[in-house]
Length: 128
Image (cartoon, helix red, strand yellow):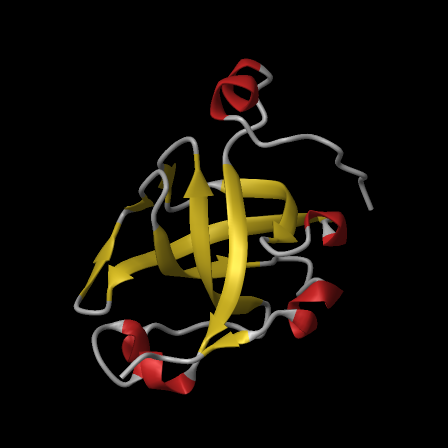
């Protein structure tokens, strides 16, 4: 586990080449899959759908990450192989990138297996 003790400032992040940063927020509830394209996306046992947010830059599908952590606890980070496979900002359609500052439901693939902290991430209830 890597220890972080920094404030996330976009200018500093870009100057130090610390991007892209992808925050893992919450697991989508089953209700999120009842509308739109999400129900047709096939995922493996090494993949998760999760609400993510980008920081400082647009993050294209296919981007690889070697450090990943949940948004609520940067100290719970893990050195791991992860790939952004799918992004949905709106349940009706998918997009080819996660725009800077936006949240969306993303499919993240972990080729070496899911990190242990995934089990600790909360599920987001859909607002009716």
